[in-house]
Length: 241
Ligand code: F6R
Image (spheres, rainbow, N blue to C red):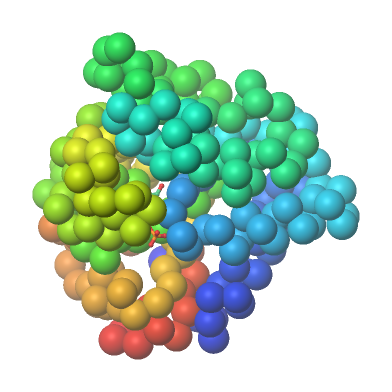
């Protein structure tokens, strides 16, 4: 596990974008695993800035996102489909057919999960997976207690996660109760993993990740077993470590 410490969120975003752009340039057909949430927004903005300024091309890149809420269609402003369009895809030259997220409105969610796994396998696996971390140590929507052997699956969202995500919705009642997420085993098969952690609300999870045991009670802890895992964290996220 490699740790990159940054002074603040801005520096964290710069480091993450730099690493991603380097990988994209050295492999124009790269398969990127992407995350939503607040943390990667700064990184995505820097990828957009670089695309516009330096012409880094996304034409041959494929993306697979970690997760999506069950029941939200892509046009819903709270869906992760919408988020990815808004924060990244519509600003770069990636063909729509190259971008993938689990379909939260699929008629058969279990079949959707199975097909998502198959899709990742067919693409040859994820080259670089970008992750955020929940205050409870979750990665994707893999909440504490999720098996390290899990593949893409349907989850019941943790109350803490629904509360944390309620800021994007009009009320807590509107936050979906279920989601589809890549599993922990799916994430661990990525060739390289980059985890971003920013702010005090992540400090406890980051402390446990760095100093604690590898346990299913802290899903992110398994990342320490990955041979190519980098954590980029700012001062606040590292304040208890
Ligand atoms: C998002 C995701 C989540 C977030 C995590 C942190 O696709 O899979 O695991 O990365 O909840 O969210 P933020 O960045 O909003 O603190």
